[in-house]
Image (cartoon, rainbow, N blue to C red; front, side, top):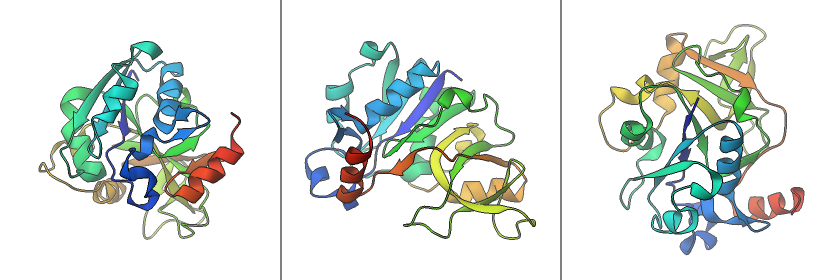
Amino acid sequence: MKHALILAAGLGQRMRPLTDVTPKPLLEVHGKPLIVHHIEKLVAAGVHYIVINTSHLAAQFPEVLGDGARWGVRIRYSYEGPTPLETGGGMLKALPLLGPEPFIVVSADIWSDIDYAALPAEPAGEAHLVMVPNPDFHPQGDFALRDGRLYDDGAPAGAERLTFGNVGVYRPGIVANEAPGAFKLAPMYRRAIAQGRLAGERYDGFWRNVGTPAQLEQLRGEVKG
């Protein structure tokens, strides 16, 4: 895979007051914005073209990141207007910039050691999601995983319920037929599950959600400067 989408359009409401003046993906950990962590990892995995969707304080992204030349990657921006389009609507709006092939999608507000180069170039279905053990703030998980396939209700015996780690590989078709506007990806996941077309893997390495000031400070204490 040579293309990727970084989801960076959220309002960051739980991160206030920090996000009153800075978009959450541009908050720094030891002098490096969260989103740069993903850019560097994507480039190391061979990605040469990245689309970043923006909304809240959108003008700051090109000011900080530019066109990607410093990392040897081309960055394009998909501006959604002052109101974010949610995960699904944002992906749909970005499709013309991403092209027809499968692409990596990662949320800017996580931090992990996931090896993007190890993700499948062709998902076995509509998408391939990286699942992580359920964190304390989400003990019920999102979907069940067994033998590389994801399930919702009615999962088979031996399936393990895990939390979506906000990293995956997608085919454009997962949202291509949706109406433009704001919508979440969750209904698309459940539709793909019903069709047996949502794949996944378990990741047990370092992964952190960065949604609140407390989580940001915890991360700063866990990673080296």
